[in-house]
Image (cartoon, rainbow, N blue to C red):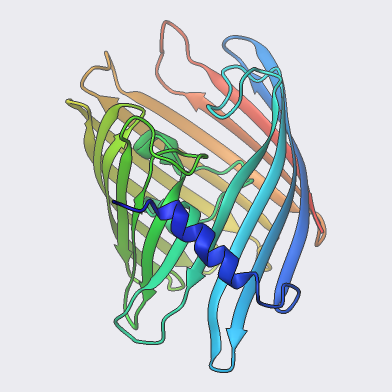
Length: 320
């Protein structure tokens, strides 16, 4: 009998429950409101988030042996159509699990750490750029069909490179396999704290009864307060070849409180009548230690169904 990964998660959480819950625990409340203005069709919508983020380090006499990240958010939609898969209507509200995992740390240089739970899938630029709760996006939906999934992930940071390899169930927000779904994902890269970062990623599996395969190369370069990022992906959806390209130029203030970015996104599939090109510009302001404001505008550069659609988004976020 094969034991599914989420059963291991329940066992480990039970064992960790014996530890002192408040020791080495950091937490924050996160509240945000997002406004969306679509040009085609002309409509507006809002999304509201209220969440709890926790980060806990588990230790014994030999030092730290694990840490956990838990993010639980009540999310309320208002006239959001189309709406994300986990909701039932354009005005639905639900408790959503973002990151919810435990990472076991090993002391041996060559034995990987083990992560169990609900995590961001290791692929492309998103792997070293956490965008949860932000307007900024790096195309996980386009490439993988989902951003987070339940499963097990092996990871390690070495002297000159780091890697993550995962197996997950394809249930997205549910810890189960749906219609035989399964996902294998991985990325190996140079160290993510350096000014030059190069990464190679792969993705293989079945999600929503669709076979998906993808390989990708990504690069990041930082010079003083400027950054350049690129991701190139090639793969198949069922038997349909697909290509994806993202280019980004960004600039941050010296204290990282303000950031402006511009992106060009290219998507092409054999079944498309023409490639889809999109330009994005965004800006974020850290008004104080708790309050952040963000603006973003996306514009299709080629006509789709006889029109070039646009989307303006604004978000205010308060964390304390």
